[in-house]
Amino acid sequence: MRVYRATDYNDMSRKAANILSAQVILKPKCVLGLATGSTPLGIYRQLIEWYDKGDIDFSEVTTFNLDEYIGLSAEDENSYQNFMKRNFWDHVNISPDHTHIPDGKTRDAKRECASYERLITKRGGIDMQLLGLGQNGHIGFNEPGTAFDKDTHVAKLSDITIEANKRFFDREEDVPRSAITMGIRSIMQSRRILVVASGVQKSEILKRAFFGPVTPSVPASVLQLHNDVTLVGDAEALSLI
Ligand code: GLP
Image (cartoon, rainbow, N blue to C red; front, top):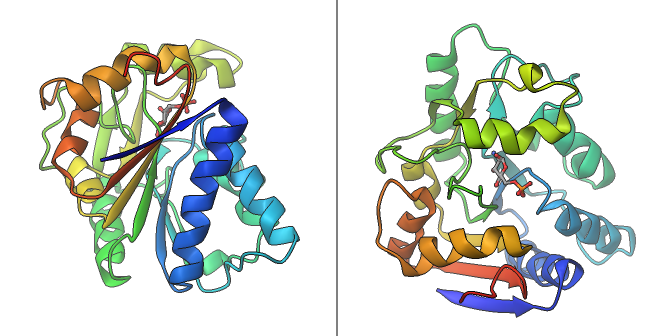
């Protein structure tokens, strides 16, 4: 694992955006795995800025997002599809039919999971997967206790995740209780993984994930078994490492 120490959130975002843009420049037809949450926002802002300057071209890039809430439509401002459009896709020259995210309104979630997984394989697999970290060590919506060999599946959100994500919703009752998420096996099949973390609230879990035992009770600990992981953290997040 490579660790890049950033001074603060902006520095973390720029360093991680540099790694992603290098991937796109070296392989314009690449497949990126994308993430939501607050942590990647600065990365998307930086990539948009470089796109506006003409420094990066997304016209041949394909993307697959990690996860989507079940029950929220693309129009719902809390759906991850809406998040991605607002914060990234609508601002760069990525072709809409190259962007993929599970359908949270599907009537057949099992089928949706299987076809999402098939599509990733059909597009050649993910070259670089961007990952944030839940405070309980979840990746995507793979909560503690999830088996490492799962592909894309329906996941129940843990109480701690509902609590952490309620800040985006009007009321806690509005936070969906389940989601479709790439599984740990899907994530581990990515050729390269880029983990980003910011803030002191991620410091403890980062230490457990990367320097503690590999165990399903800390889903991100599985990343210790991947042979190409880059971690970019700011000083606060890396304060215990
Ligand atoms: C959500 C997402 C995760 C993300 C996590 C952390 O639960 N499903 O993919 O990593 O939040 O979000 P944040 O970056 O806001 O701390």
